[in-house]
Length: 130
Image (cartoon, rainbow, N blue to C red; front, side, top):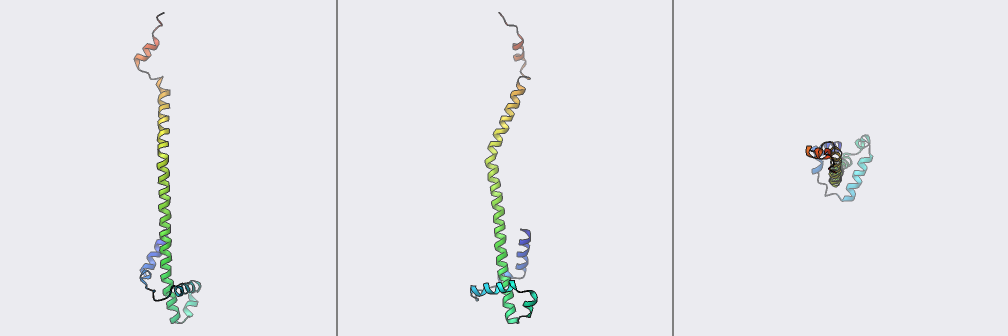
């Protein structure tokens, strides 16, 4: 996620998020972005400036959109994972508390016959008055 956020910051520092390409039809923008992804830097450099710069600008704007979508998706996944973990913890907490209480009762029950109050011990030692 950190790498994607770094990419987004880089693209924003280039102004990619503020490019207004609404004058171009959506299909043309997709086409230019696809061409920009497929071309090597050398092949792009050999193109005429009238062709090169629209490809670069469209690719830059589309990359900013794609990376933002990826960051939002990763953030959503992270939040969902945390929420699921918290739900499991909340669901399991009463059972854990109940088990701890049972264990404590068992421990006190087993220790109880060794540590009885003095008057109970005396009552146990009195002879049977028959």
